Length: 382
Image (cartoon, rainbow, N blue to C red; front, side, top):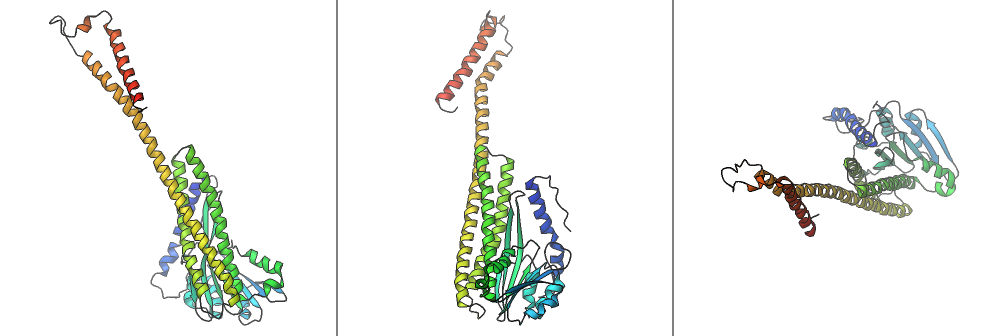
């Protein structure tokens, strides 16, 4: 298991350390997978323990039922059942359970392999007997400044929908509540609409992440007005990395939904295509939002660098003025610091014999220094 991060650590450190741990956690499985036969059931992702949780939601026009499956074989009756069955498999690290379900529903081994590999790019597949979509969910915690991504693979046939979910923090609970709340009107839809509803909820969750991330960007912008420091730079880089991760999830998601909407499959009814076109528009808007946020963050980074450069220029300006003032003063001090013998000649520094030569020297210094400051001011260099 990944050790928990100390909650007393700064949020930025929490974000960085957690990201590194998650990245390194999947390395052993990824290395084992190298050289194996295509379609091998190897889980690639964060280390997890325990068996997968399986929930079966049976839906027809009259009623619906929710039951918890004890083992993979409990789902086998859903393949040819009359009502539409939604099978939620939470925990794809349980390769045995995922493999058994995939084998019974005749899901291709490469599709199951993609479901087990949490680093797969979002994609759409039309196998004929079923359709599958790999998607990424997004959740942003504004307090810890941590972006969490989870992979979800949605596979559906004529009377069944299977969602392979990476972790227990699923976002699909509202779908089950909607089926119960809306009653027969919701249940009249079939498996293609249920699959659309799952994908639509994933895309809707993007906007929540964008909103929270946008609030943080506004806070950083306000702090940049007060002044640029290293903490602001670290915050900007954290947001920039989060947006890069979001873009890797949202950009291919747009292509995936576009391919799904244009797919010539009997598993997608005409009335569902209307909803898919709307979902595609939502994916375009989400991508535009990501690009807008990326431009804002890039502008913030430019503002930070400009602010640091201006501060450095101001410091150099002050130091240059001080050095310029002391150049003639240093010249006067070096001249009168020379060793002259007035007994040899009256021209050897006659000022050394004056009664008030020392006070007059400081008056001369003050006049030269003050005159330099006045000249700088009139030149608008100060």
